[in-house]
Amino acid sequence: MSENLAFKKKKLREEIWIKMEKAGLTIFPKPCFGRIPNFLNVDKAAAKLKMLPEYKEAKVVLVNPDAAQAPVREMVLRNGKTLVMPTPKLKKGFLIINPDQTKGKERFASTIKGAFKLGKITEKIPKIDFIVEGCVAVDRKGNRLGKGGGYGDKEIKLAKQLSNHSIKVAVTCHSIQVVAEVPVNEYDEKVDYIATEKELIKVERD
Image (tube, rainbow, N blue to C red; front, side, top):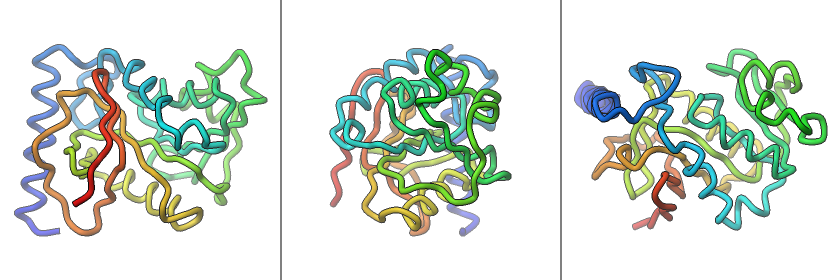
């Protein structure tokens, strides 16, 4: 990555983090600096995914482990779908959480602690039908900016390699995180849908 691109990404991350904190839009864990921001009405953004046929038909859904996507993980289990959650920073591979084993405990199972207790660690993940990630920023062309570790891109790449390169990817975020343009390179993974507390955006490819 060129120094110029790295600088642009860093600058945009900092702008979003500052803007969200100043506007009082973030919730625990706070402050949001260095994180995928958790935000007010996060559950409304998660619920928008239920409108997607790809989500409805999915039996196995991969969701990132950040706090902002906990409502998505809970919803996946409540909807009777198998949840695949990457362990933080992919240090221990992936966790598979079976909805049949979490009945009545979906909220606990959606936390990192609960997923480790009720899920099963595996190096080999099952075929993924749908992917949900978080972001610091995203644009309407589907360019996603993470917190800078590259883990979201790795999770998406790995799932596509092991399952299907045409799997659809969604992000959930606050509407303030949807920006005019996200600086990217050819290695950055694009997303297909953006679910905010206000709307569900289908990315239009050029």
